[in-house]
Image (cartoon, rainbow, N blue to C red; front, side, top):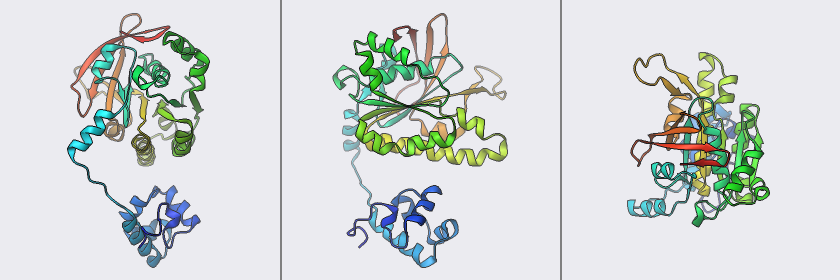
Length: 316
């Protein structure tokens, strides 16, 4: 059957050649599972396939797809073994249940100068430490969409952590994305890079900046959210596949519908809200202090931590 023939990529499916496979990928059908859950008529409509070929492709994809069932105990054992990146501030580590965890997306949103990017720098340095020292023993892929990456800050933080500054800089691979297409491609093509370079942290700073500037008005909202949804799901897939951590920063807006309390709301809507495993709201306090609020987590209670952002990095 299809599974015995080694169906792993779209091109391996009967009735799907390289050209059709590329068209399907561009339309979001980028893996065997998505073909398995599609209807033949759906593939005929979106990709122009012949009905018989579409039926063969869907049947083969179903046979090639397996589901792995685990007990809750096995899931718990895997979760307990997951690595976490220490933040540099014990109060923040405690708030996060030990640090920023792998296999998950951590989102930090807040206004300008709230410390989101600095937090990303600190994680980019700390992830390079060995596991026993609060890191994941790997490198960082830093996707910079706003031109905010500063090597000199990395050097300062590395020195404070007792790391070789030059080595710390070598451990961060930076992509300067100026369009949403570049931002999306940086993640879509990351699989090989993650394997070869031992990437253990992906930072996207910021997630929504380019999407907001390119997709303007309600007419573009559906297209924007569709692209954003695929982008975030690819980030989560990388996190799951390679046991790495994903940290994204997000912009905010004031919601006029909120009459009492803080009207600050993260942008990106429900797609970002549901995709982020842990959501942090960061805001500026007096002098070098920042208040970090845990807004949402599947297993941690809401709470706040007060941190400092100094020339040496993040601390209590």
